[in-house]
Amino acid sequence: MLWRSPLPTRQLITHANYKPSPKVQVSPTEEPSPLSTIPIRVLLRSVALTTVMANRWLLSPCLAFIALITQSKSAFLNPDKNPVLNRMLQWTIYNQFCAGNSIPEVKNTVKYIKNLGFHGIILGYSKDVVLDPSVELPQTDVEDYPAECYGMIDEWKRGNVETLGMIESGDLLVYNALSDICHETRRRGCQLWIDAEQQAMQPTLDDWTIRTESGLPTVAMKCAQIMGMADELSCKLLQDYRQAVKEGRATPETPRIYKCLPWGSVEERVNYLYRRAVENRGAVERTQHMAHAMRQELRRRILG
Image (tube, rainbow, N blue to C red; front, side):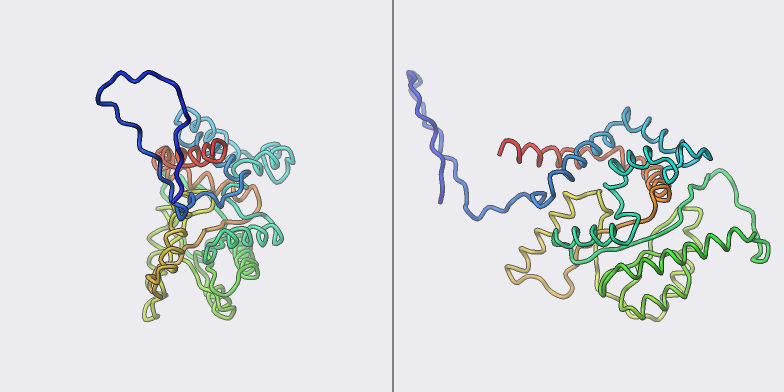
């Protein structure tokens, strides 16, 4: 056992019941901090962003600015056309929550996540729009949809098929529909992860999922958090899993730990991030525990 003795001091002891302070015991096998595997640049960015997310006065103007970007038709506020805005968003929210906007970037991010010890990734591509819940969508027959709708579906399908080329056997793909993607995923030996969507779309998605999965075998349980969120939970789960393996307590039924990685252009991902923030605003504002964990880890690295 290692112990640290108090520094020698000279002082007059007058209290009759004085007892010396017990020596601090430090176990040589003490578990490291779960967040110790996070690179310092990621930790610093996480500290800054979680501090903003946990403060309503800071979060509100940030959400208003992102809303302006998602709703504006101006090229100046289009991240894919304004390189300065694009770089600013990449350095802040995009790199924190998204895997990249090209195949090399995504593959580097996947490698980084797996090097942290995660058992796999959930890689998703989607076209996001933020729907106004107060506006009722019209009931439309299939033949009434304009050609632009089919163009968006084809683009979304191409993005998902391209996503399949960046994941490995055992990883998962987030998707909304389309049987072609199901067949391609099965051919590549991957799995599909059915993601939750906006409430306006969720009933249709649930119905499609139930009908598609009917009669199929179940799969092993997995748990995941979105990239850039709840890292203190993800890393603690990984640490507990490794400890269970070391002690021989892990079984095939023990859930594996994954990270969910959205990818796409900066403009597309800003829509995704804004939708997540709007739908989970209450949860976003209650991230004090996450901000505290990140600041505590930063303090530990600086002060030891």
